[in-house]
Amino acid sequence: MISALDLSADIGLVAVVFATLNIVVGLAIWCRYSPWREWPHRRFDVFRLHRWTGYGTVSLTLLHPIPLLFARRPVFRVVDIAFPVWSPQQPLENTIGAIALYLIVVVVGTSLYRVELGRRLWKRFHYLTYVAAAGLFTHGILTDPQLNHSRIDPLDGEKVLVEACLALVVTAAVWRLRHHPRRRHGKTPRP
Image 1 (cartoon, one colour):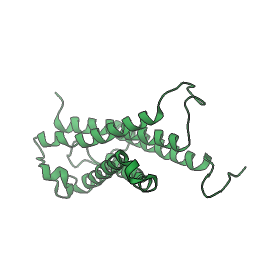
Image 2 (image 1 turned 90 degrees about the vertical axis):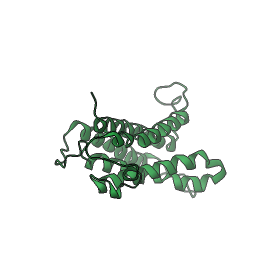
Image 3 (image 1 turned 120 degrees about the vertical axis):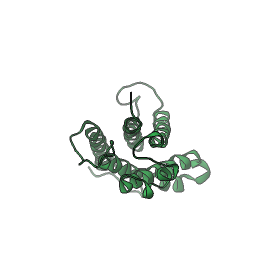
Image 4 (image 1 turned 45 degrees about the vertical axis):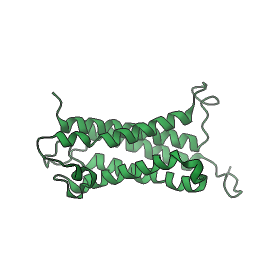
C-alpha cells in the first residue's frame, strides 16, 4: 500500500513534469514555433497544449501537499501546508515550494484575465513563471521525500527526474535566448 508521503512525492514529480512541458511549450510559442511549418508538420493547437499543461501544473501542485494531512508521522496541519514556515519538517524547503505554488496560481490566474489586464501587464505577471520554476525545482531537489532527515542523494531516481527537467528548461531557455532574433524596438537580427 502506498503511503501518504509516497503519494505526495509522486504527485509532486508529475507536477514537475507538467511544469517542464508547460515552460518548454511556452518557450516554443515565444519563438513563434509552428507545428505545421516545422516538425511534426501537422496542425495542432500549441496554445491549447500550453494552456492544459498549465492547468495540469497548477492542479497537481495544489494537490501535492494534501496527502501530507493524512501522514501518521510527522503530523501536518492545514496551516503547516498553507504557511509552511511552521511545518514540522523541512520548513525552508516547504516554504520555497509554497512560494512556487502561490506564484503558479498568480500566473495561471492572471492568464485567465489576460485580455482584461492587457498584454503588457499580463506579460509581466507571466514572467513570474521563471521564478516559480526556480522555486519548484529547488523544492524538488532539496526536500527529503520520506521526511526522515536523511542526506540528499542527487543520484536518487526522483532527484534525477527533477534535475533532468531543470536541465531541459535551462537548455530550452538558453536556446531561445541565443537563437531567436530580436524583433523589438526596431532591432534587426545579426547575421
